[in-house]
Image 1: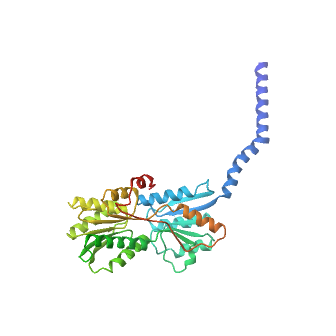
Image 2: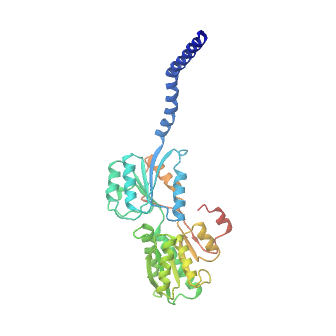
Image 3: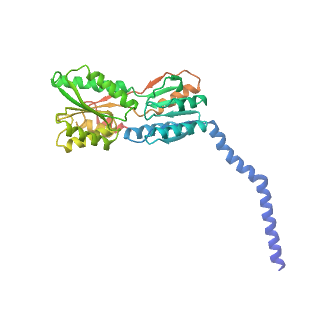
Length: 341
């Protein structure tokens, strides 16, 4: 009895001692562990990014570029939102970023219009807004700091000038050419710019006839559906202008199912945009005649812009990424192996 009781008293004493030690040192220990990351996090630049969606391989590559740029190792804390191609989702995301008092807001607008109110809210909160990939149509240009992306009008013009040279090379410069256009999301910067650029070149040629143009939402499924409709309506299509690679993939499927051929030596000339790896493989095999690059690797450009803003430097209204034009002549195996998207 005595031994058991003594043992219990000893154990009780040990436990009490441990509790006292924890009270003296443990709270200090846990405080230090908790405080360290909090201090580091406060040093980071917080960036809220609203991506318009994940509708294509290009968009996936664009998202990866941003996520690879705004890392904790680079001194950033990234809050990322996928709007799933809905403007209302982007408006909610931007207002959430404002309420969280982020340092910068970056977003790729689904369409160009309807942003004045939310951008004014960001301006009043003192949060600079950077447009990524696409532009907005606002009267007050001070509502955003700058825009990083592609010159979509120039892309459309590049496609038109390539077709000019190709028809001249084939000896068809003065012959009637029937064209159909698969357009991206209506009201988006890329749809507006590429349409404007290409049609401006087409207007210089009386022999070019744009039979039809229809929105296919930048998706393969919709691209196939729209192309099927075109093929039912028109028996004499010579050229397809597809405003992104995903729509092009669907359009080519529809054309082949109709019994016609595409690309180099085919029945229908294919002009595409974006130049993702899968499409460049089809350029190399001759299935796509030309692909106008739209460079999704914009993360590094955005980093540089924020560095400039952090340093108090003035930034330009627009920064365009470097882009190329691809045909069977310049798509090499080395290029395909190096392609990151």
